[in-house]
Amino acid sequence: MNHIQKVALTKDLTLFEPLFERISNDIIEKGFSICPYALPESLTTLLAKHIIDMPQTNFKRAGIGRSTDHVINNFIRTDEICWITGNSDAGSAWIEWTSELQHYLNRRLFLGLFSFESHFSHYAKGDFYKKHKDAFKGEGNRVLSVVVYLNQEWSPDDGGELVLYPDKKARSSLIDNRNISITPSFGTIVVFLSEEFPHEVLPAMRDRYAIAGWFRLNSSIANNIDPPR
Ligand code: OGA
Ligand code: MN
Image (cartoon, rainbow, N blue to C red):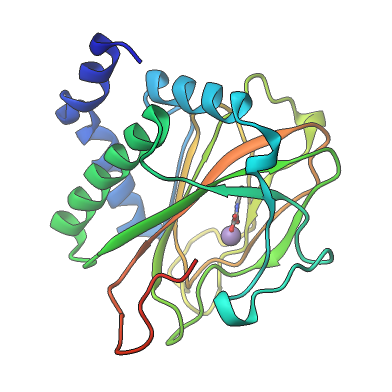
């Protein structure tokens, strides 16, 4: 990445404020936010290029469950993932952007978000992730899930939609609590309360690239340092 791009991505953070405000207002109102084509284009392009150029061997079959009971289960999910670090320009620009979002949400919503973890995901043709929750009440410390999509020209025939299932008990105030289907198009950002929204990824008909991440509370205790990998 050249110097000018770096400055554009990192120095003009006030540019993101309207988006961050929209996300926090949506979270307050509905518990989720869907913002089509909202991730800064330069960042989306950088991430998309990075994920496509990455050696296929960096991706590992995704499992389910926490470290000790981590299992690979072909029935639940079939995608491959690669955890994001700050070791690449794309990774560090992404981490910087999410950290701005984290600070904004902490100021506006008092969520006490403490850390962030995220991975690239690759769904090949036919891959899916069945209905699941990212966190369970009282157990995990994942508070907010963030997903962004890196796919150019996704058409309705390509499948791979993310479906959110609003929890009718948790949000009786939702006027419209039908399932919400989201096309994984380039730059679309989805944010939702991890404990409140079961969700699934329908089978993709072509390669589908995304990032999934989680803001967490700090719940490290004595011998159980979070987050586990
Ligand atoms: C996940 C997940 C959603 C998506 O990785 O936990 O739900 O649309 N991803 O990729
Ligand atoms: Mn999920």
